[in-house]
Image (cartoon, rainbow, N blue to C red; front, side):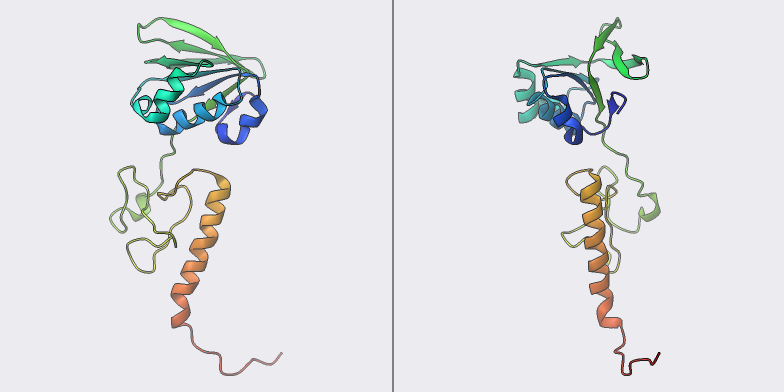
Length: 187
């Protein structure tokens, strides 16, 4: 809450009629900038690469009156006092310029920590563990949950729910192997 955040989805309601900056150039940044554009007075999207801008949502975002896209730009420095107030950027021409905002959002996809299971279970192109709707991997008895998987969104609440699903699925998988209790122990 010092002006530099990592989830526009969570904090967008605090940015009504404010100036905001989104830093990132993938699909997550485009979605976040679009979310902020519905409530913010002005949204700056800082992106080195513009691949995600060619999507339908990216094209719509670029045509929004309250969005400025800084293509080919990169962050040099975050400036401020006890609160992040502005960004010093390097443009595609190599020159630096500064933009100010009430809030800044770093919207870069997470790097999945899946090295432990690499070569054991199937991973997608980004290194995320591929699961089905019951959190099963392609190997029977191995379950996965959270941001390391190929689920839709990187949100804490979603990861918690996925963890609960994985636990229930693992229990269901083990249930046939559990022995029937024939006598209740006395206390």
